Image 1 (cartoon, helix red, strand yellow):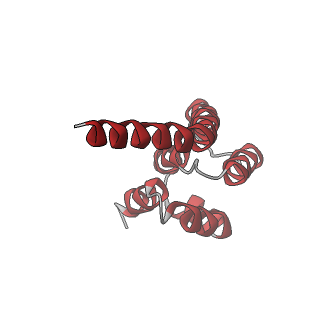
Image 2 (cartoon, rainbow, N blue to C red; image 1 turned 45 degrees about the horizontal axis):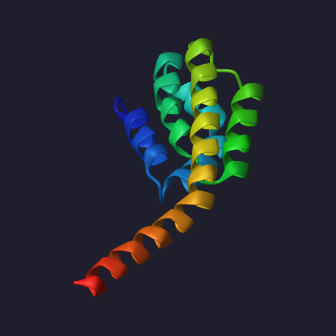
Length: 116
């Protein structure tokens, strides 16, 4: 129980498990607040900044945290929401640009191999 928040934080930070974990966090929000001290809830939620590959999920996280205050760590939660927005915007830009850049790089490497 003492390290339960850490397990949840690690799951939130996981690319594959993060979205499902976030869903469970919201479903059991009151239980989490009752079970863990506010400072640990804040630390657990800091991992939410990594749930950024889906813009709509990032917006849901930000909206939820804005309407469900944590007893302590208001500044840390605000920073988490800000970082989530930054990470989400970067992931979106990367998704649209990376494919083109990777394709161009692959074509350059293929051309070099063929030239040898």
